[in-house]
Length: 301
Image 1 (cartoon, rainbow, N blue to C red):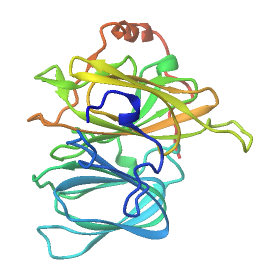
Image 2: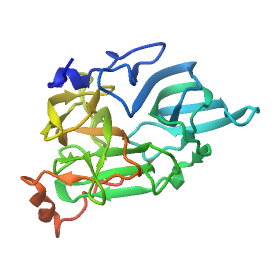
Image 3: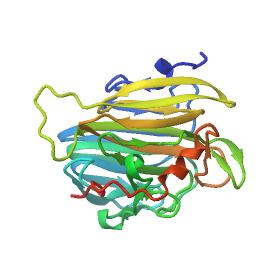
């Protein structure tokens, strides 16, 4: 099957449910090779992670968890408590990196995501506490957003995975100007698949009625690498896949904050995130000069 439209690369919450997970993205999706994600909602329960050839980062979205794991090169058992956070809009969380071939079980209460990338290369397990997560305020004005760079090459030793999360306050735009990373051009652009996992919430400081339905929008369109056409209203738990193409903006609607977890990996020899802006919109960056960062940021605990 040739993927060309939004329905092929956008998945509503639970539409990818499997084996006790709310959502699973992996190589079973036609045309998907380099990245994966698992999302679960636990209520004092647990989910297993089999010892397969993938490296992983476990990310508490809300709540707290304990990860029991056994490394391929260590016969002993290990456990790591992840204190987590109230929600994705309450600052960074502590995370746990597990190397390829690690058997694990996650238990606790709340929502948890597991970012994955296939690899045979082994790196040490690593715990990053919340206070050790690099927090970046990117853009300016209505293009201000907050980025937690816990899974980037600068913060974590890994083989393929590049993982971060982005908070976009109500009425702001992120993943903008539209950009792409679907060609390997050394020193200029990386070839990376990308997953967007979304959550939405009433904006901080607002008292919304019970009937409120937080939402945002996400756009992806064709590049020379291939056809794709995604323009979707996004809600908590939805997932958009970007195999190639220009992507952006992600737009937070008035009254509602937008969060996404980005999972990237690809076939390039180097683990690096390099992008090309769409030439039609790259000039927008210059308009940020002299503008202040949105004073609502940073969002913290």
